[in-house]
Length: 208
Image (cartoon, rainbow, N blue to C red; front, side, top):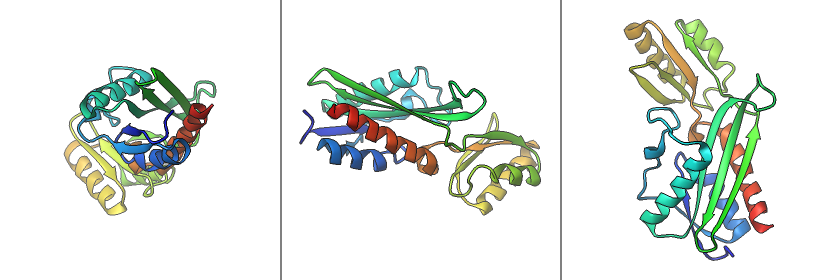
C-alpha cells in the first residue's frame, strides 16, 4: 500500500530526523520534507501564534494544506502538547500525536504516545541564584531554554554564557523574567525520543 510512494513530512524543528528513517525502513516510502508550506500559520509551539485547534485537528489540517501545495497524496504531521498527565494528575507529561493521511486509499492513521519522561517546566526568576536552581532540574544545556515576558521572547538558549547575558538583560530592563524549557524538538532530545517511539507505533499500526 505504501511501498515506493512519496510521503510528505509536514513538520519543523528537526522532527523529520527521527520520523523519516523509521517510515522509510518500515513502510518503504520515500520521505520528503515540506518546503512550500509554513506550519506556523496554524500556531507556534512556543506560543507567539496561538493554536486555534486541538492537536489532532491541527495535524490533519497540516497534512491537507501541505498536500495541496506540494501536490502529493500521502502525508504525515506531528503535534505535541505538554501539561499534567491525564491520570497521574500532578506529574507533567509529553503527549505526542502522529497522523498519517493517505488520500488515494481514503485512510487516516493516528497514534498517540504519552510519557512522563519530560523536563517540561517554567518559573518566574529575579535572581541568578533562582535561575541556577531552575536549570539544575531541566537538563540544561543539552536541552534548550526560553526567557520571556509579555513584550520580549528569546528562544533556543543552549549555553551558559548566552543564558547569563539574556537573563541579565531582562533583569536590567524589566526587573524579572520568566524562564521555561524550550519544548521544540530540536532543542529537546528527550522529546525527540518520544516522537521516535510514536513513529514506530505508527508503522506497526499501518502494517497491521
